[in-house]
Image 1 (cartoon, rainbow, N blue to C red):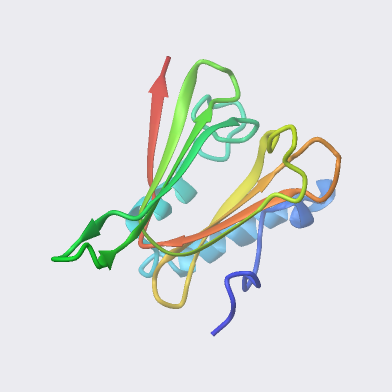
Image 2 (image 1 turned 90 degrees about the horizontal axis):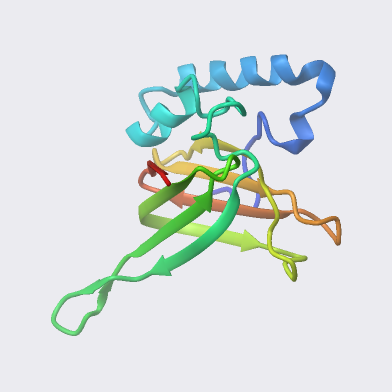
Length: 169
């Protein structure tokens, strides 16, 4: 199996955002989503195919949002608390500073979070996309803008699905 660190493809991340080809990149991404609709987890598919999620003018869109908090939890069950699962919760201050965006990944199988230069924080949530793994799990790849001190920060989260909530302030 391919490593989570080596995603199988990307459609609309920084490397694909050539100004002359951005429309084509989104068309390829929409075709990918349509071709894999049956395999996609419902929450991720609803976000990826919504008319507002990638619209930078929409206040719910995560582009340019700032990280408020990140929590990684391992709720336990079983006689000795030996049954573990990983959950990730991300809370962002929306780009227009008029609300919060929350992502919840309740059953995480793998994740990587690279922040080569995070002394001043991660900067703006730059771009993200949802893909589906061969096992029918969502792979959410997120790029952070940073502050120019080094390579961009990048997160990859593979989970059973993702929940999204917009919380107006």
